[in-house]
Image (tube, rainbow, N blue to C red; front, side):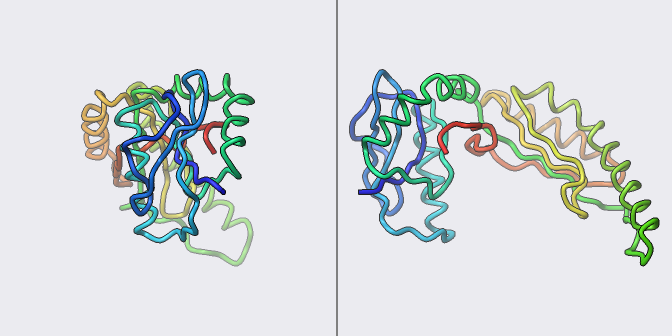
Length: 214
């Protein structure tokens, strides 16, 4: 029977009180204090409801245990594959857990307000000049937001990932530091002249699970 993977955490094996999608039972399968949290992989479509139920289950698990969240839809063929995953990647998983334990992810996005990029042009030179100008303004915004990095354990940022967004960032922040981080984002939003900032979360730290759960 295929298993739906919710995450990997520091917990002992056995049934869990938390429930998964549709109220399904969750079980921890592992050894030596590291386990994969799984539920039955009934046919699940990625609807708003199922994704929300999955997210809720992951957040409940994280409230009680250090957990690396898995991406929605990650599956394991059976329980033996869960054990193999733990054994083969124990050191890597343990290091990833050390990074995210006690922290959550906050997302910061900037969108243009007063600045408008050059309109599309027929010749390549005008197009490239427009891109360079937009990139320069985006880098100025990223430099202004550099102070947020000091309030996080880790960060993943991109400048000008989309024409309407000069900056996107994910920050791994101590739970106790969330309010301080949000306040700093609001302060920076007030001083930006060409863009508006939004900060969402806290979320499970999906961005920072490198080579981790799935």
